[in-house]
Length: 118
Image 1 (cartoon, rainbow, N blue to C red):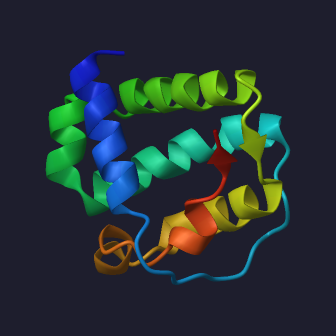
Image 2 (spheres, rainbow, N blue to C red):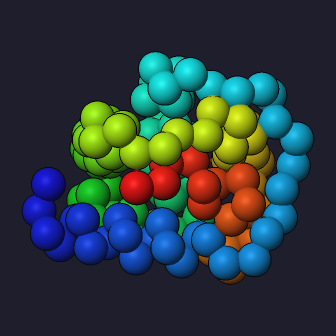
């Protein structure tokens, strides 16, 4: 992953974690389920809610985004960072219907900001 893309991911992810706005969870996700579900949900949300950022970082390529986010998450989990399956389940559940303005303002941080803590 290029440093430009890593920086872009970091900027977007940090920008999404300001205040809080949460909805219900579908239950905790195992690490395997998280790696299967989160990258696609995140990339689809990024493409929908921050199209310019998505196009700039991932050249409008959803598969590229999913691959890079999967690698990023797997690397963090392999470093034995703390993982919160409840937060992962809640975050993945809310992403498909997340309000873009609220997401970009960081209103979902309680659900999505504490999944992996290194």
